[in-house]
Image (cartoon, rainbow, N blue to C red; front, side):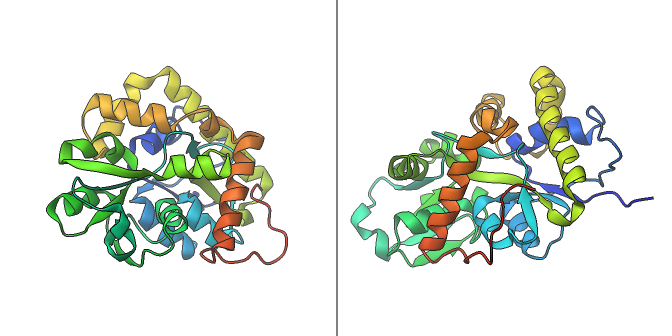
Length: 280
């Protein structure tokens, strides 16, 4: 009997929404058993991907650029779109001209947010890594001068007295013409195309199931959400679970390829050895 496939995803509302049906027996997989999922901060998942810890895992697209030899992207489950990128925030008195010399909090070295910020402000060198849910408080208290925030923080930063210096997603959209690729679900290439495609189908069906049974999903989502307000959770899901989450399509794939290429051109991502497809 084959061992269950290991699975990791984040506790953010978009991921728990996407995976609820698949991990709670509402959407079956043909001939595939999943292990009990491990929910970790996305940067922890990124670092574990470097160690090839999971068969199926949520990844930042930045991290994907480092592990394409081992993992491929599933068409379903990605966080990608317009108007949903990371924000660079600071206190109201911060001078944007001081950015290169400021202490900037980032939500992890391998996050898409960090890659975006480094492409936006290549001269900024004082980067401080911390968990995404600690950044707003660090900026508000003055422990750092500014910070790159992700996830549901984009809905609540003004409540902390912070201002947005730059919407990094909008900067990407304006300079590239593409939607911003934030995170994806990746699978080990060694699982084989047939297994990978069945997992992909299961994730897509899990999203469709959640769309039809949202009330059943929300107790599970609330269990892990950093922001407990129902409206914030709903806004988070509506923003990050969209048509690209159901299927990347050509527009999504082109956006990802452009993002990874620009990361390599900036010297942040490694060059690929040979021709490596994103998909299985």
